[in-house]
Image (cartoon, rainbow over all chains, first blue to last red):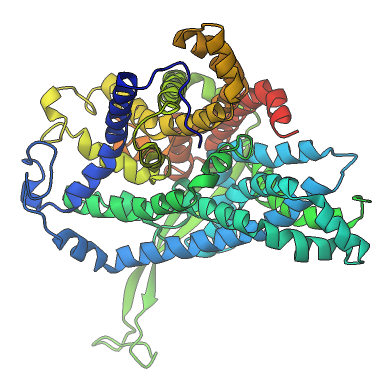
Length: 286
Length: 315
């Protein structure tokens, strides 16, 4: 990131701009902070906490909620399921999408046009998921796969596949084609050029794509709540179940919200450099 | 070098077949469902069955007759009746559908433009020389990746009208129909303004320094700079972000599900939530499929409007 000062003078303008930026960032961070603050409160402090709910200043923090929630088998089950589903879906989508991305980036498809294939994969991403949830539910019921992690892996891999295709397509386009052509001349064949030359070079990008789609799968809710209710419960579904006959227990909700939010957010920070490209499906470079 | 070998089809095939199997097939199936009235009935029968002891022999009562127990047998019976276009006709007269369309449209038309405007202004702000920019930019990434369902519940506690952190304002964030819709919009703005901001910032940083220099030499004011240099250069990015945000906003589901449950009443029930409830809570599968298709058509119209732009972006 280059420092750039379009049309502004250093000095007071800089200070004011910085202050506004810090204020904005604090506003955007507040809800996550609030969930965290809530997770540290005793139930009695829930509705009476003063000010901004700062631990030690506005209330005495406790780890009891965390201990209670993380010791609940259901929470552990949900965290385990979400992790397994997200990793499996990411690996499956990478396995399916990377060769396709390579084919689109390198080969010429005269009849279908390469960019039309790309847009076809993309258009799948903009479909409203509610349009496929009912037939998918019925199909899984027919196959006896309701409430299984397997069904959720299948559908999530489908949702994140377009990301893999467009991100990796761009990665392969950015690689110098000469390396692969040299391998072809040496008689490696197209598969060899892909497997031994292009794939290792694309590995960092694959890792970044994998992280981002892990986060998307982790956050998915509509299919998780439709397909998995008990044994295949995911973290978001577990949160949705937190409202019971005793009403919303804010202190537990804080813990659950934090356990849901922390993994994808950490991943986003790790994969920061790739996020813009990932979120715009490869159209804008960050 | 020949890049036309048949291996290209082998490389492409798994992904294409996968999408056909898990997107195109379900869509076809759901179109089929949309022409049927699907009823799931549970038929309850009572039957007398002999009681068995642990060894599997019938137990006898005092008079030597086999003892019997009443057993309730529940049978789920699915029936599908072809009703042609009736499901689609029903859409037009359904007040819930009308309300869901109103909620979705208001949401898309208010939230998305605000996100783009705020995102653009923030990008211009962050494009300047400011203290701690990498850290502040990292903070702005958090909302985008925060689990929407967790966000919904967190905001439920923030908007809580008795003892919540905003209770002192006296604003009916969740109990008033308009207030609740405004709250849903506010949460979406919180979550997705950073997305617009990040993309616009990336695009602004891609603007060559010389253009700013040239404008400065010509004596352009900051306002001119914004209007004459940044905005025109960002138009392609703005269109792309608009498309992506509109497509996502039309899918709105998680936030109202968690924060308002679609209420009060159905004041914050978007189309997706209505279709989900109709199909997978009330199991009116045919009608829900028709609803989903109506939404699909709207989304397809939006995409078609932007299709050329998309093809250029990925050309």
